[in-house]
Image 1 (cartoon, helix red, strand yellow):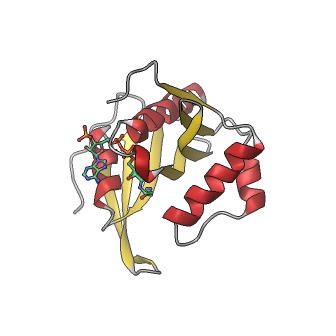
Image 2: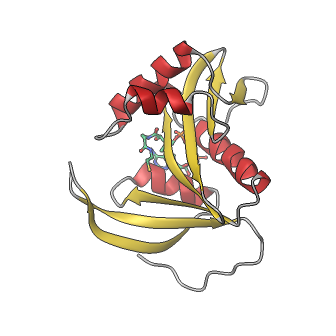
Length: 160
Ligand SMILES: CC(C)(COP(=O)(O)OP(=O)(O)OC[C@H]1O[C@@H](n2cnc3c(N)ncnc32)[C@H](O)[C@@H]1OP(=O)(O)O)[C@@H](O)C(=O)NCCC(=O)NCCS
């Protein structure tokens, strides 16, 4: 785990941040965001980046909806993985979403992405649906997941 002193979580702002996010996009996603999309993220309150000793180690972002926020991206530089950065960024997005008055955080994830599935389940996301054959390049199903932010919702079924 990362000591709180070592990790800084904040909205990315600089051209260097944009460059680091572009590199993570290209490395981790088959359809990376383009430069204007990244430029938008790098100033928006719905994006959080994690810095270790001043270096951007990862970033995460969601889209705000009227009742829920949808996580659209999360990635951590390979050399900084399994140190709690992904979880810390998800917690930061959770707090932001609560601040916006959202009732839930939602996302979709490749069924074969075991690291991401384990990360989401480790912070309390539940599997609420499955879209068969949703992804291409490579082909995969999408697992739909949701984290209740109200404390009122009790899920009574898991979808595998
Ligand atoms: C998924 C990802 C963001 C996780 O980031 P991370 O900083 O390494 O995650 P954390 O260190 O916070 O892990 C938190 C928990 O998630 C689970 N987890 C994370 N990576 C895992 C792995 N490779 N295998 C199994 N469990 C894993 C564990 O439960 C872990 O807790 P633990 O280390 O105490 O056992 C990172 O692997 C990544 O950038 N992947 C490529 C991009 C991607 O797939 N994004 C998701 C798209 S939906």
